[in-house]
Structures are given as C-alpha cells and as structure tokens.
Image (cartoon, rainbow, N blue to C red; front, side, top):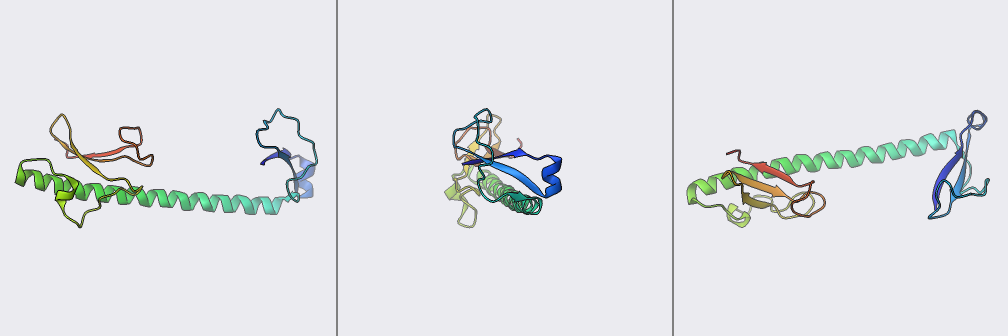
Length: 147
C-alpha cells in the first residue's frame, strides 16, 4: 500500500498532525480514497521529521557507498591500465586480464569482470560494464591510455 498525504493545512500543522490516508496498490491520485482511513496512527510533526531524518541518513550512507565504489573503480582501473601498458611494451601485444598478475583486481565494484580492449587509435582501454553489468551501455566506465 502506498501512502499519500492528503492534508497538510495550517490547522493540521498547528495541531502537530498530518492526515495520512492509504492508497490501495495500483491507485492513482485521481482514484477516490475514503478519507480518514489511516494507514497507521496519525503522523505527528515530530515523527515526520524523525522519519525524514532517517531517510536523509540512509540516502547519505548510499551516497557514501557509491562514492567509495567510484574511488575503488578509479584506483583499480588505473592500476590495470598501467600494468597493461607495461605488458604491451614488453610483449608487443594486448594483454588479457589474467596476464597481468594476481595482485590486480579482476572485478569492478559491481562484481563484473574488467575488460582490456584496444581503441581504433591504438590506445589501451580498461572497461567496466558499470552498475547494470551490461557491456556498451551508457553507464560503462572506460579508462584509456590516451594514445
């Protein structure tokens, strides 16, 4: 069941209460809802602020996790790229990820294997499929040697 706030008037705020009614699943805002059918106890201004603070805290934790993943991604891709360039200069061919040693990350922060490819320009590219795990989509991350 979704929750829809149906009344936040001066009187409700003055009383410290926001009237909340339930919307059956699949209902839209245009669907008539029997007023006064509380999903739970009336929400007081304080409990609403507490829930908002919890939601903000959760959003901040998720943002911090996403930033940590991006930092890890950048560091891992830079290490793989440096090792791939060194390998290519020594062996005159593009390495496979397995050729670069055990100490390098093999998977991106989303659990997808990194890929090493050659660009048309001859540059080495380290690729991550990004959060969706699918290659060649908008969320892919590519680090290039810049040739």
